[in-house]
Image (cartoon, rainbow, N blue to C red; front, side):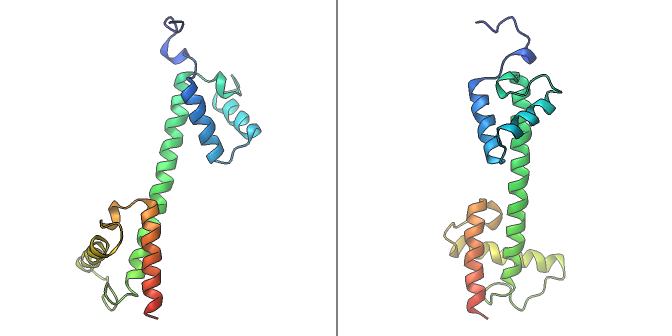
Length: 150
């Protein structure tokens, strides 16, 4: 084991980490120049290459990217849930003609949407348990239902 004598923080990046970082940089729209600049800034000029990162540095970057991606997806999902909730007030079998003035009203309206999603959406689960793609599809379903009532 050639890396046995190296401290944990000095071990070189693994091939899996290189692949994961390159994939993440591509997803984020970085070109080679952007990537090299980012890595140079991240390492305070020590290296500008993914291959020059240590295992620990690569791990920190991947953790940060994963956290940012999870936050972004969570915000998108929250926005879709709000849009679906808003659409429900245009649909007679859901919340049309109901108020949302009190916490009890809000909980009742939310329960009606979840009941509908469990019984009449193709995913058969509560809104808050759905993936981003499932939420997008349910939003389309609600938009179609709202259009029919106009």
